[in-house]
Image: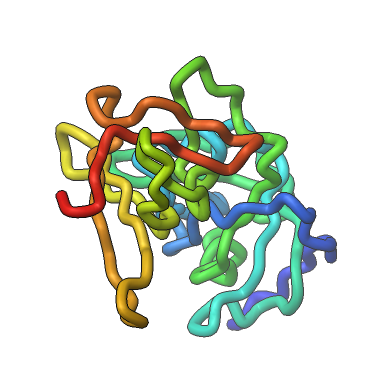
Amino acid sequence: MATTLTLESAELPPDAIEVGHIADAWGVKGWFKVVPYSANPEALFSAKRWYLQPSERGAKSFAGTALLSIRQAKDHSDTVVAWAQGIDDRNGAEALRGARIFVPRSSFPSTTEDEYYWVDLIGLDVLNREGVALGQVRELLSTGPQTVLVLAYEQDGKAQERMIPFVSAFVDKVDLPEKRITVDWQPDY
């Protein structure tokens, strides 16, 4: 029997960040599994309102953007499990399968000094101490002991990639307002 969800229609906030997706139902009381896009999914725990959008494959039970009021979200093994208002059984939770989860950037927990959300670093220009442009942050990789900045740049008309460890030995300054990272790194490294 197909479940018809009645979710509150909403508009995606301008500062919305995609933080995960709903994998499947969890149990029989409306809980669902979430696959977070961060090793530290604090944004999922701090936001009490999640904005959902259907993925291309799955979550066909609603269209557009829906607002989900979260009753509870918690760690469970290598995922997060959550329970929301209006989702009270397994069928309701299964109807959310595949939905993309967004939360407003403004609802993320505050960071401490020298702590940054990866999403805030994407797109920043990276220059060395001499002012030479090394590229723009395309993504970050977690290699276990450290995080690595992956920069995109062009050389001789061809797209290139450069990697710089995101550690204090090489990163002098992150200036979010100026959208710039200064590093101790040379173009030929």
